[in-house]
Each structure stands twice: as structure tokens, then as C-alpha cells.
Amino acid sequence: MFRIWFERGLPPIYAHLIQDQAVAVGPGRLNPDVDLIAQAGAQAVIASSRVRYDGGFFDRAAHVCVVSRTGIGYDNISVDQATERGVAICVTPDAPTISTAEFAITLMLTVLRHVKSAEKMLRGTERRDFFSEYVGLEAHGLTLALIGVGRIGSRVAQVARALGMRVLAYDPFITPERARELDIELAPTLEFALGQGDVISLHVPLSPETRHLINAETIAQMKTGAYLVNTARGGLADQAALYRALTDGKLAGAGLDVFDPEPPEPGHPLLNLDNVVATPHIAGASMQSKDRLWEQAISQALMILRGERPPHLLNPQVLPRLAERRARALGNRVENSNVSSEKSPATDLRA
Image (tube, rainbow, N blue to C red):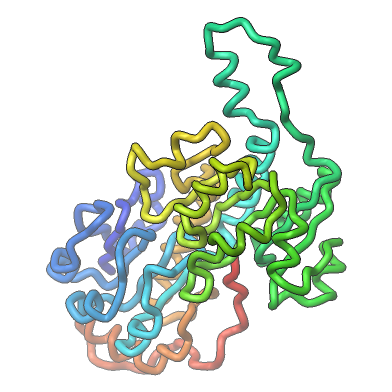
């Protein structure tokens, strides 16, 4: 039986996914001690986003052959350092697409229609002329500027078009053919997209190049009265600059599912603004998407442990070394692996 460490703990309703193949080990807490993982002899980790998986982790957890993420992002995993040590890294890029795209649209409509401030008005004791005071906007006819048009961004584009929005996208990797297929316009530069958007929605991974993509300078390029939606990563936005823009009138509102760090402190300034709708990084966590996340993450980890090739392996170059690591981890002699070391099909991992 294989031994799998679950960073979040395996919910009982998903226990059947490892039945007769593996046992869940460890306390399943959000911040596991790497030494406990090593002591448990775990050969696989089903990872979330709160633990840093780097060379130090892999050196101490020497039995681990694979880290499989329940999500699309992997900014908390050093893929290069994992590869150097013969550890496979898998992600589940398709699982949260529908849920996250729908949530981005939900946040957009909620901030456009000023739902938070309208509810606050209704809960108050003062008699007011709600009709006259309400200043919500229709999405129809507005321009949505998408920054990133991968799996999630593409689905957001389709829904936005159905709402009657003009959809403009900035993404250096999207082809004109794909843009025509989605019926969207391509922006030549980020500055052009930001300047055109009534709503800017972020759908790019967090990297050194994209950290604080939204900052004082890029906010200045936006329309006065624009709205920002972020369901990708909190680090994409300089939160101090965003707060200033939301309080000085440059931006009319924001829908934020992500923060940096997470979770934000209860007194975080952005949480106290009436023009901000904030949620705790749950855009991709619908009941249906969690079914897909657990199933895909676990199945790929088991594939690696059985010597098979999973569909969303980030570092296929690890395969020649993986057979030896598997043999050591499982206590067997080195044997020929059934895993092909051919180049894997290209996988678009953009949000």
C-alpha cells in the first residue's frame, strides 16, 4: 500500500479514491511539519497552496516521489528544485475552471450593481430614498478587459459576451485565431487594455514578472471609475496602491477573492470598504470542482507511484530519475519503469 500525506486532510467522502491502493498518513493539518511527513514515510503529497515545497522540503522528506496540487497554481512549489531531486509535480488545471470563471463573473456583477452598499442601506434604520440613491451599473455595453486568456479567462470571456459586454484581452500567448473563436478583441499592450476597461479581471499566474502587476503606475493607466476583479493571486496587486485608488475615487470598486498574504488580518483596510466585495479564496471551491480537484490530484499521484505517466505532469524531464527514487521510496530494487520519457503534450497552465 502506498502512503499519501494530505496537506488539508482527506475528507471522508473522498476516501474511496484511495481505497485498496493507499493509506492517508499524517495529521492532515494546513501547515504540516516536514519532519512528520518524513517520519510517516509518505511517498506522495496532495498539496494545497499554504506550504512551501522547495529543495529543503524534498531533502528532508526523502521518500516523497510526487507532489500533486489540488489546483492550477504552483507558485508555492519550486519545480526546478523538485526536478533536480527526482520529484514529480502535478497540477489539476481543468478542475477549477468553471467554478472560478463563474465566481469572477459573480464578483464583477456584485461590485457593478453595488450590492454590498445596497444591503448596508437596507439594514440601516434610517428611512431613505433607495431608488434615487442607488447607482448600480449594468454590465451590458461595458468593456471587460481580461488580463490573461487561458482556461478560466476564456470562459469568463464567453459569459461576458453573453451579457452583452465588449471583451478586450491582453495576453501575449493567445493567437488571433483563438481570439476570433472567442469573439474578443486583442489589446496590443497592457496599458491599452487597462485604459479601455470598465472592468479589469485578472487571470494570470503569479510569478516574479507578474507580482504587483497592478500598482500605482498601472492603476493610473485605468479609467477613473473602473472596477477591478481578482480571482487569481493576491500578489498580482499592490494592496496599498489598490486601497488608495479605492478611497480616492480613482477606482469605483473591486471584487477580491485573493489577498497577499492569506488569509488577510481581520482589520485589513480593504475589508472595511463598502466598495470592496471580499471572499476567502474560494472561487474555485464549489462542490463540483472539489470533486474534480480531489479525484484528479489523487489519481495523478497514484499514477506516478505505479510507474505511469499522468496527464498534467509539469516536469516530464524528471521521469528518467523517477524510477530510481520510486524504487528507494517503495523499498524495492530499481526496476524498469513503464513511464515514457518522451516529451509531454503541451499543457496551457495559465489561469
